[in-house]
Length: 464
Image (cartoon, rainbow, N blue to C red; front, side, top):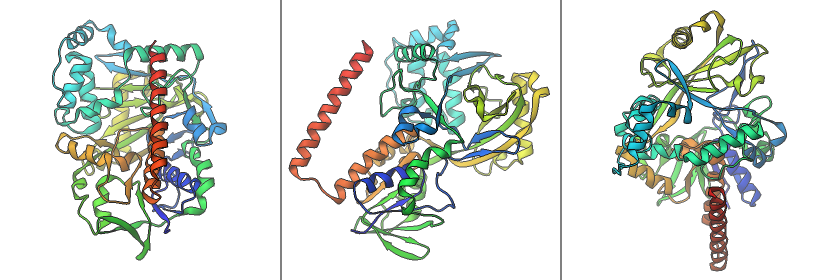
């Protein structure tokens, strides 16, 4: 059997490689860069501040599954707030201090509209007032698309109910740990699932997995083409050399896949799928706890950013004693005004915005800690390709070709979901290469039925 080719050595690619190797299948991982990890990168600047390339949420269950529990610290607190009309409200329940938000939420319970767009979803779940003041502006800022042109599937990432959220928040207070609320959809969250962070930065989370598959990874090996013949992935072209493969697993952004595939036009429709580019501006300040909570949503459209994060509130070791770090998230387009700004201008723009909310922070400002740009931060669920997105979520349409990971699945999923879904996809790869017998299928169906029934019992117990 020819090796299975994996494109990309981030969490999805390395998880896939380790799982296939565990099952005794030959694997080669092709990584275009000089190091592994993808977007799981941390930086420590000369001033002693540590920050990630984007936000990463790790829980103790994922750390254990990756073999990294021993290098992770528990996070004692994590919370979110919304800045609105000159005041801050805890998210989600603090917003209910506003009578107009409560009236709108109650009124929405008596309507049963057809949910055709994300705007419909927000109005139905939050009421008109909260949707218009908070949910819609934030969704449009991070997607760059009117909520009326987004799929209602955008709301799936906010699916926790009020009762479960209350239960998890109470558990966080009782345990003194940052219990996870809404960060895993593949596996149930409970009082025992809490945020952790790897000592030394997010990149360390992959070290145990990399130790298992390091010999399978080829760095600085960008894949030039995925070769398809008769509707089936047959191999790759790397550095001009044709390499046969029994299957191909890609972690590349989906709009890149059509450019990689040679021998089929089955994925050409993916070229119009959009990702939202983002800029992360890191600013240093004296003191700590300048924001009302770890993350502050800012739905004010006049601001350059839509979110501020003070990570040392949750993880104080990421900043020197007596200092803090605030990251401003700016949604943009490649080549637009913000994308083209100098780092100095972006830092000044964000400082002005922060000081408009908290004027006293100008005298506490210590300088900028780094500006990071990424062209593929969030997948944008536009209505005009929603059916194609759902079809792609089931299959690439090319035999022997899988697309995994946050960018490869074009999905709003965080790290534990990436890990779980990658493992599930590897079941499909194994079945493709080694089709199960009728007996094996029957046993697997019974096991899956048992897992579903057990999950339903757990869900009923939690609800009770």
